[in-house]
Image 1 (tube, rainbow, N blue to C red):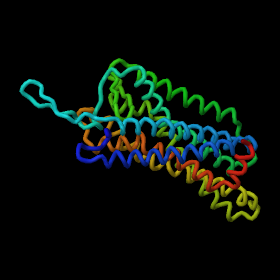
Image 2: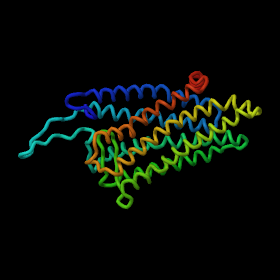
Image 3: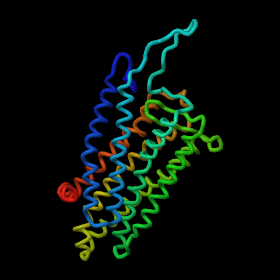
Image 4: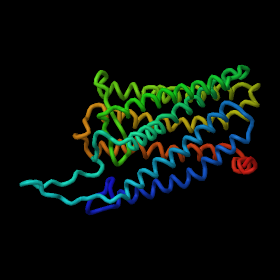
Length: 311
């Protein structure tokens, strides 16, 4: 095995394979249910956002686990070889990287990074729309603006990632299918912030609007005229707030890995650095792709029956 195992023990990679296969199965079962449910209910902004979030989670849990399991099960040559008078041993697999990646490697890198940083956009819009719906119940939220926001965000992320992945001397991290390139004019930290800055903004918006929604709901408890709001709105609000709670976790890993990627060249990274990056770039997104549909099913009535009837 060839991720974090050693010649003496393959336990780390075995646990990784079990984890990702479990997530793949759960996501494959739950995300289609969420999507079908949202196709069965009347059209609305939350229905649209939950639908594309379910599609994104399904693709994430399909692509990332497949790549990781394939790399984990791939044989790795641990044998040391003689080069002249010296004995050269291969580096640990988690440190394996090279420049000039192939077109397939660049494509996989662009896809995985795009899947990584698009969900915060959807959750930020969900939280913002829910807050506006509670704060200004008589003002409709136009779906055209939401669709335009999602479209512009995706265009920015995909264009910037395509630009980074197309650079001739891009670095390719073999075991996590990640392509990275630093723009000389911006440096490491500047390149990362320019690429993932909108993602960080979405995370902050998610947290802030979730807190505002909680405050608004607390105020509504004191209003005797808000019976219908409390009856129908609290469960939906709680569903969105719990979904956005994952944004806090995402932001913690974002900050950690930003510092690692910006301040340390690949050749000087330690096993701890690589584990943090692996957690941020793969483990956490796949976990969220399972966590989101579980939250939706728990806080939504008749999810399976409505999804089955629509199917």
